[in-house]
Image (cartoon, rainbow, N blue to C red; front, top):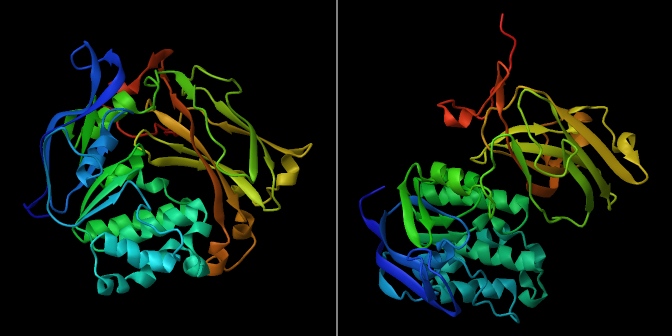
Length: 415
């Protein structure tokens, strides 16, 4: 990283006019003006990777829109040195009657690239997008996923200097998201400047530092910003999970292949007190609406989004869905042992794999074609949040208040 400034923001403000007066959280007075950004200033050096965090309505997306030129600032100055890729309004500039191939060149030229520059990476764009033979079909016939993947692939392969990302990993399926993450790492290695908004803390681990926004103001700007964000805003639109409590989030079904009937934590609907010295249970009831061989797995992550535990019946070579099926539904109960967790805020997600049994039924595990048959079909992200107490001598201790590091605190046998 050098000392050249890639992004300079000076006294930037953005005001929106409202139809009705609301309380201004900065002045505590009624106002018909909403200051989405309020006199913020910062500089980002070339080659830096910076995250933007904050609760909903804090000004994150407005900031990126101003930086990308989609929205004009009310006050202040923005200077960006170099070509800017804005992945906010993906697909803007596509001509629906043209093929995907033709739109690669059209979109690239709209973004300021010459035809010769686009030709150098057109094959990489097509391969990365996964569109296949549909690349020569009019984009009006594309599914929403195909449309987004192609537009995203164009942005990611043309040679920009600055990239502005807003929830970038929401594009495409899980396999495409993994490719996108790897591509971003390649951009980092090329000393590109990246500014990214994300609610997923694991995505922000590549950042050199983060900026936290609150009510349009910069709250913090340093390497410890994420820790502060976790403390205050981890559970979106909810208060922080209190010690000993469980929060069950509403979730959407990400796949038509599965009907999720029930997913219980300790077999109670909400606010279950949890102490790490006690076992707890997960109960899953679902229906497989396809002919695919699907196997579920629970994933437990810490507050930074790092995977700590993955548990699934596929680790049992003798597992079969039929063994747990009843009246067309699969019923699974999982008991997690006591004395595993510290006092972090943990999340539990649910995933479904296709064809995982072949791992236990083949001798050639290094065969690429074998590995490619194992796919993630659905991913229910962060259905549960919980923060356990730790019991010591009949006293409940919240280790998050002490200098105890690590997401797990295992009760091993010591001799």
